[in-house]
Length: 407
Image (cartoon, rainbow, N blue to C red; front, side, top):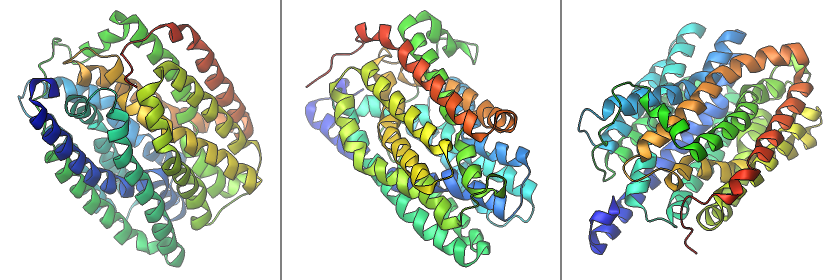
C-alpha cells in the first residue's frame, strides 16, 4: 500500500499506475462495445443463434465474475504480483477473440466469445486492489474516472465505426473481432506494467472461504444483499435490450446503426458526460446515499426502455441508464475500498464480483424465460419494482459510515 512509501515514491506509484490505466481504459473501450453490442448482434444476424447460445453469450462476462472468487483464492498461494494476475486473463481474451473472428459455426463462435469475455471479467478484483494500494483515499474516484471516461469515449467512437462497417457488409465482423483481440492484448500489457504488490495470502483453505466476509461483516453483507436484488433486476434485462430492438419478434427490428446507437452510443455518451460528476460525489458524499440515487435512476431508465416501441421513449430510457451507469461503474469498482480492512481489498472485491457473476450468469437465462412468460413490457415493470425495493432497503444503512470522507 502507498502508506509504506515516502511521498516521492507514492507520487511515482500514482503516476505510473495512472499512465498504465489510461492505456487499459482505451483498450477496454473497444472490448466494451464488443460485449455490449457486437457479440450478440453477430450471433443474431449472422449466425441466427438459438436462445440458449444468445443467453450464453450474454452470461459470459458474468461467468468470469463468478470464477474470480476462485482465481483470487488460488492466486494468493503463488506470490505473483496482482498486475501479473490481472494481465493473464486479458491475454486469454485476446486469443479467444482472434479465434472467434474466423470460426465458421455458431457453436464455435459462441464458445470462444464466452471464454474470452469470461476471462475479461475475472481480473476485476486485482485491479481494484491495485487502485486501493496505489491511489490515496478521497481521490480514488477522481483517478479512476479519467481512464473510465476514455473507455466510454472510445466505446462510443468504436461503436459508430464498427456498426458502419457491419452495415456495409456483415462479413466485416471477421476483421472487427480480430481488432478486438488486438485491443485485449494491449490491455493485458497495460495491466502487467502497473506497479503492484503480490496478492495477499488468504486465510481460508476453502476456495469459497472469502464468502464468510459477507456474514461476518454485517453491514457489508447487507449492502451486498440489496445490490443483489438491484443488480439482478438490471442484469437480466441486458440481453433483452438488444433482443428487443433487434429481433423481429418485438416489431422494432432496428438496423445495426440504430441498435448500436441505442445500446452503446447514446448511453455511453451520457456516461462520458456524467462520469466526472459522479466521481466527485463518490469521493465526497455518503456511499449509501449515492447508491440510492443511482438505483432510482436505473429503475426509471429500465421502465422507460421497455414501456413502448416509440424510439424517442426508448432513447430516453437508454440515456437514463447511461447516466446511471456513469456513477454505477465507479461505485461498483471502488465501493469495497470504503468497506474492506487493509490487506483484504481483493478478498472483499472477489465476494462482490462473485455475487455479480451469480446474478449475471443466471439473469440472462431467467430473463428470456420470464420475458416469454410475462411479456417484454411486464419484465420492465417487474425490474423497476425490484430496483425500488432495493433502494428502500438501503435506508437503515444511511447511519453507517465506513470510511472518513475527505473534502
